[in-house]
Amino acid sequence: MPKQVDHRERRETIARALWRVVAQRGVAHLTLREVAQEAGISHGALQHYFASREEMLSFAMDFASEQTSQRVGRGLHELGDRPHPRDVLRLMLTETLPLHADARATSRMNAAYVLEALHDENIHARARDGMTQGRALVEQLIRQAVADGHIHPDHDPVTETDLLLALTGFTPLIELDVVKPQEALTAIDHYLDRLFTKNDHGPKRARKSPARP
Image (cartoon, rainbow, N blue to C red):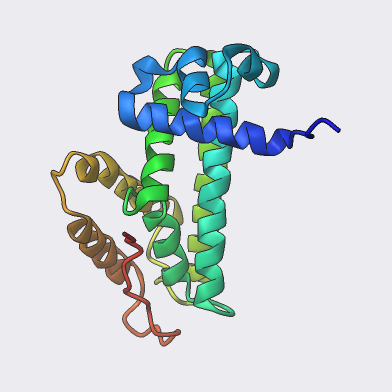
């Protein structure tokens, strides 16, 4: 009998090949033919899954977001039941930074996607919707932390959300060796220490870096 192809697995293989093209050669080389060659399949076979560059790029970005969510999920599991909101916010933030191989791949994919979004209305809408949802989640966590007494009520949740997300700007600084990963983590911890109240007696806060070999 002919071997059955797992179409989800094949699409993920193509997405990871796209990540490698972006990481190794840059977004300028992001063509269907280049990705097919990197994935070890024919150009025609790739077109069976993705009819256009935009469709392939959108799937690769969705897959990158899914992988980031899974890493955050595993981190939350390690934090145990009812983790402290400071630890949750730190985990969500640091997993967006290029501190280990998987995060670097998804981070570079995100950068490529943003560049495409600047010149493509459909991609722009998808990227904006995704970022808006992510921002809303962070704001919700901060509002809950204020309500629970972990953050002083004088702090404006909208402003604090914007400041927290601004820390993702460490990504290009880390990638270009302007700022060392540990320096970025120190700055993140400094911000979180200022955000959370001094008399907060929640669970002991984790300081372990998420950096991996």
